[in-house]
Length: 300
Ligand SMILES: NC(=O)c1ccc[n+]([C@@H]2O[C@H](COP(=O)([O-])OP(=O)(O)OC[C@H]3O[C@@H](n4cnc5c(N)ncnc54)[C@H](OP(=O)(O)O)[C@@H]3O)[C@@H](O)[C@H]2O)c1
Image (tube, rainbow, N blue to C red):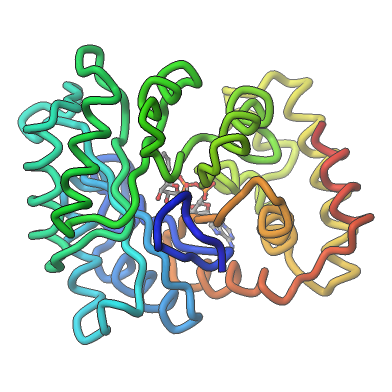
């Protein structure tokens, strides 16, 4: 178990990302029944941290999670959610104290609970002083509505401003074997201030499961041809290590994050319960220090 920042929240090395649980506004072809099954499969596999957000289905992900959690004792799950997008126009961001207070109350209603384990400001807005926003969350924590304070998608400068009073417990940001900027931009500050880190896109939206081959490059326009070739080469090394462990590529990649001291918990997303089942198998993969380094070097 890892303690989140300065809070009393503790989490397992792996949780569940839920943007495909009810996130119809972000992904096509999602089914509510699959989303509920994904959450239930996670619980069956003792994966108890659920990472959701207002933005995933404009509240629908939170509602489906509440449905999936019917009958589950509240203290058996860790619920993390996020807000910042204005319900009437999600392109407009708001971090004002009044907005955050309402957003937390609305999330509590949809999740049918009386506290959130982690609440993240999902994105910084342009106008609210960051420390003022975080102090509003500290008031909500004092009122028992949330247990740990998080920010997401904040630059280092924005994080420093947000953490002026040392109140930030956790940062969620883009990080994966193929997107390692946070190692330089955020990790030194996070280590120095005992702030936990939760990476998003840990499987690079499925690319790091190894299910896309060289011919699928066109589906990932964010990578140059050269970068995509290098990722395929890195995956070939992961595939060898996976073979030695009788594991899948996704399991080895997830095991790498679980062994990474800068990662508090890894939250792979899933569209289907079978994916959760497979990803949970990462717990059985124990990388040797040499394998950890080999994977690290394969994507540098
Ligand atoms: N704070 C933020 O701004 C922010 C931004 C993005 C995400 N997040 C959070 O971080 C979580 C993780 O990110 P993510 O879900 O977008 O990306 P991810 O974890 O990198 O990739 C998850 C996707 O990979 C595929 N997948 C997962 N396991 C698989 C398996 N075993 N075999 C084959 N395919 C598999 C599934 O998509 P397909 O089946 O469709 O291929 C799944 O939806 C999200 O769910 C969300 O909770 C936060």
